[in-house]
Amino acid sequence: MYKVPYGQAVAMRIGELARRTGVEAGTLRAWERRFGLLEPTRTKGGQRQYSEADVDRVLTVRRLTAEGLTLPSAIERVLGAEGSLPPGEAETLMLRQIVQNLTLGIVVAKDARTIYANRRMAEMLRCSVEELLSSSLLSFIPEEDLATARERMADLRLGMSLVFDGKIRRSDGTTFDGEAHVRPLFDRAGRYEGSVAILSDVTDRKAAEAEQRFRAALLDAVGEAVTASNNDGVITYVNNAAVALTGWPADEFVGRHIDSFPAASLKSQEQLEAIRARVLAGEHFTGEIPVVRRDGSQISCQLTSTPFFGADRELVGRINVMHDTTERRHIDQALRTRDLRASAIAVLGARAISRGRDSASSDDVLVRDVVEATRRLLDADRAGYLEVNEDGSLSNRTSVSDVFVETLPGGTGSLAGFTVLARTVVVVDDIAVERRFNVDAFSPGTHSAVSAPVFGPFGVRGVLSAGRGPVRSFDDAAADFVQAMANVIGTALK
Image (cartoon, rainbow, N blue to C red; front, side, top):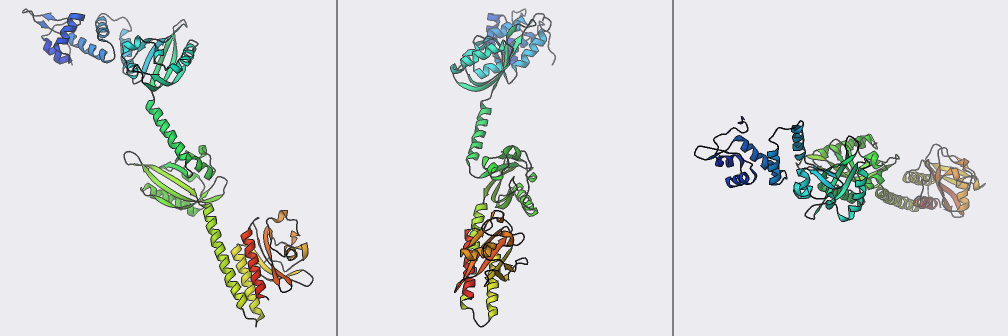
């Protein structure tokens, strides 16, 4: 828009000037009388007329007072700037305007005496720029932090830059969380001239960080394993329980894609993909899945996967809560196994009591059924019934294994012979450390075994044995079961 050059009179009455600047006519007259801000000309009739220069002066005064200057200071600056500008003054004025419009507080000081401050600094401290220029910066430091502040100010003279993070006291006595980056200023001769500080109000950020820490602490206090992942399947959070459950450290957990973790099987991988598809569709999922820990061991977990949404109701990711159900599954499996074993003992025991004695082959059929049930319900690799010979050795009467030996030595020459002597159940956890009898008689591949005596009318007439490849395969419940099945055989052969 074209403007009339300063000093050129135009036919503008004070009412028009008031309308153009937004300042009441009475106020304009006061500024004219008191400060000489306006320079009207007069018509032949003696009426005042104002120029575009007057409009610019008034608008500039309004802007400067809005930036924090007092009215006298603003008018003095306006009137003082209308002469010829020294070299670089225009750039300096432009720089000051830029600094004044920053969202960060800026203050230049020397030995706590304020030399310059922008409008944002005054706003944060809830005072005017003039009040800030007449105050010591130490007046805005809480009493308990003054000693530290003075020590750090001395470091500036040594050329050290500082970062201050703490409470700032406003002029009204309230405080806020501030973060200031302070740099020393030196002249060309290297003399200390003060410092410039850039201050940010970080109250909201610290509150958000505190809330985030609280939420993290809350989730860490939860006994369940909790993880969060985004829509791309990248893990963004894990709590301590998840670290303990899986064995993966948090720094190896966060930032990795869920597919980078080993799956228990192809089937479980397909299951995870189906779960992800459901959650991405906004659905919840609850079910049991296998989980491979960092050491390669596998556990079973109850997984609850829930989608979570942002403020715009857009899907952000999912939260997964996992509960280790391995122990519960083991207990359930143990109870089921106990019930199955009890049922087998009852059924086969009833057969042993009621069996006919007119056929010798009926004994062999029942004994074989007992041996097979023993192997199956112990999940053993091999099982067999051996009878005691007159010389104390033992012969294989029936077995369910291709490698079960036909004859074993008596006494401490074999597990079966030792069981006859012990007249009680004998459990071998690991043949590598077994010293009670000779382990050479063990079938190849067997590392743990259990053996129970079969009692007849005149003492031990045989032994029921079972073996497995893994060590420590048989617990007390297994030992009791083998003895019960041995008693069934003893009843059948009476």
